[in-house]
Length: 192
Image 1: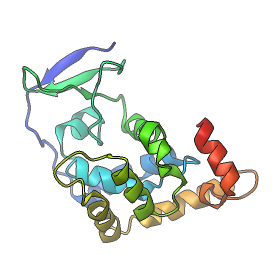
Image 2: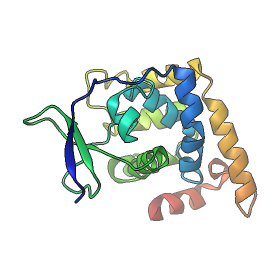
Image 3: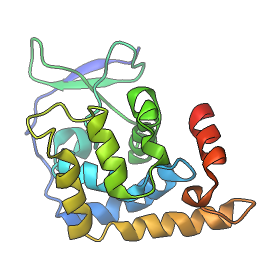
Image 4: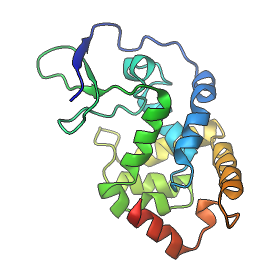
């Protein structure tokens, strides 16, 4: 188990605008999503919402733009703000690792059962996340629509198109993950 420590700074130490944060994270999102079925637009939209444009201390200082908790099974470092029963949050060594972890989480458990990575559009993936109970906050029933609005507002689907172009160049059959036949995607989802 990694070390656990306390953060005593401000909740939102960053001053990123949405455009600045998107520019900072887009390549990490695309690389993490390669041949996973998860769309970068979904990851980027989620982190804009969940990390206050990367300004929340977990994202800004600790490369955790999705607010992943450091449960007892987490072997890396953990940080918390406050004392007592305040939860620990994962600390990632880099933003790239934070995004890789987000994709891994979305391909496991209830998200895998819900088939999130097999959905071809951002709203279909977001609806699956919502059905699987990704967000337990007060806005859980509006979560998919809220993130989809962010995706549209910042034209984040352009990163999905970049991902598809990269996958076509990378894959032997010149097909992006979303263009693979259903059987191939199902096998990938089963064994990934």
